[in-house]
Image (tube, rainbow, N blue to C red; front, side, top):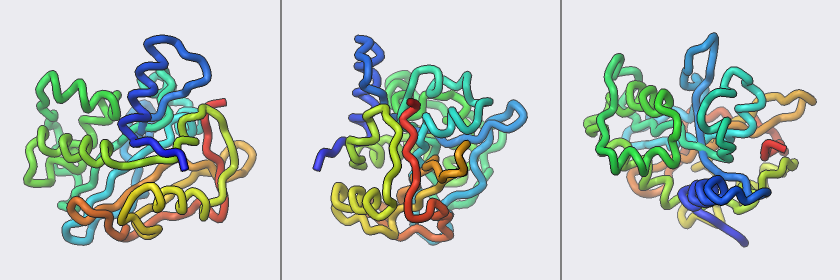
Length: 232
């Protein structure tokens, strides 16, 4: 089975943009809701209320850019990312860093930028989740890049095409590609599309420390099948 890490998806995106390779859409991840001109993190999430649990939040960028036109000016929409990371819930509570800005070195910012290209997304992830933890901004975003670097995703997510997928097949691919991951480690979130079909918008992956864990308070609203939007 073909596989590729989340970070490799992003690298393919950067290469395709640099050399203008047609048909090789990028993979990244974003997770913020634009409402009345303000970017807001989605209220629905696999809650990391269980002690020690962490939730990496990945967004299907083409789906959200299409379903929420107010996102159109976000960098990930303009540059054709397929996936972006929106944040990491550390399980320490929420909204502790009101008004604070994450301070990263230029080198770390360059690395984080590849999977979280939007400045406002990074800031709100830090304010909502990172600032509640005992970690510094540098350590918090290092955790995000470490999880993203190790997580393997089906290569089909990088085709740039849209197609209907059985949930059981998608979950099966994820668990086979990632050692130690179980179906309970994944929370899939969908929204209703223009044709009343469920469209995958978010993939939440749950961890216990460095190992995969069991998600709590899941949304899991995609049904037995859903559409993966490639922007075409």
